[in-house]
Length: 588
Image: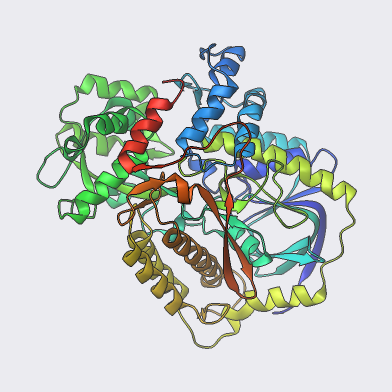
């Protein structure tokens, strides 16, 4: 019956069963009862499953593990490089924990059965998301972690300024469950489904960020969004795949405009070299691709053309070491490769890929709410304004720390039961789309905001675009909650109801992200503003923080958290900042 709820109890609730969630659960299970709530299939959903992927650590530690790393590399050099790559917006304490913990966390994965396929460079071991998740899943089973599969966490419950649990929705039965918990770890990944073109699955809708924000958690630097170039736009069968992005990095190829010309050649030769030989290709080629589209030189579906005409096919075939029989993540790309061999171009574009911003945490995984922790891509601060180092390492390092500290908190703290008033308020919010007779279709609104987000909050931004996007968001909102309605009123297997809850999260986060991008009047890393094309260290080398207060967004800025690394000053052009950064990378 609608409005009723079941109750379960645990010590530590982990939200999400990707890499960060599983590693959090493993750490938390050493001394606490742990429950994982996952919206999708256990250990088979989210971004981790689709990871390419490599895990990174410093070359000296890699060589000590028996791999051909670089013995003269060090954690200190790795630390410095991550800061340079992040345009110094990184929380340096998070970076320290990242480089310090990486060797032990990677060794654990290997000990737990993760297969390593080779090395990408002197700091990166090649594996894939399936291998990582399989290793972590085996260990969570050994720890007897409880799993609530196909359960969406809709809201966090906070009493006396501390976490007391969460509200969950069983996506199959429609049953609402109050999960009493002493501590909660959010590990829900990003919100890629906000964009009409992305590299991730539709289930990544910012549920953890939305719940944390409504509970009063600080969010940080949500304007920082990485787009990945060379992602397949057409044919539709392969849309959103990073297969050609990886292939391009392995064997080369050419990017062409609609006249068949190599548009990257018109850029500064040093920028072109960086774009074609480093992982900085994401921000450089994505920007160049969108410029071609805006100038009317793009492909029919809003991208550019990828061609292998200039590459000897015997060199292309060597890539099958990484793509056996041209298969990748369960898809057979042989028909596509045959077309490329015949001389056809494939339409590729810049897709929403990764979020540097998210829930604000410290090096222990703690948020500003007592008992609330977070790990992985849903957090912000580690990579600053640009992620080059591996998100896979981020999720296992932060997951271990968040889980371990969540259990310590649960053991030492007396936590009140969730108040009935808070529970009923959260249930009422969740039930609104079912109870409402008239309103907006969540599916229609999702498509509208996806298109608006890709245009206004995409690779190239400016004040007028962002203002128009914010106006569209405000038009879609009424009061605190959207007027979304589910035409189907049954609670069980109601995808439209779930869609309404996801869209509510997406629109709230989009609003924050767009307003953050409008406030940051400079270009830095993946945040490029055409109307403010300089990196301004004097005025904008600081973090943008958001909190939900009295029904509205409250912004503030804070200095970057530093340890030993001195922050730069002055201003310079965006392209010059990239050239300087790559020149300063210590291991190149």
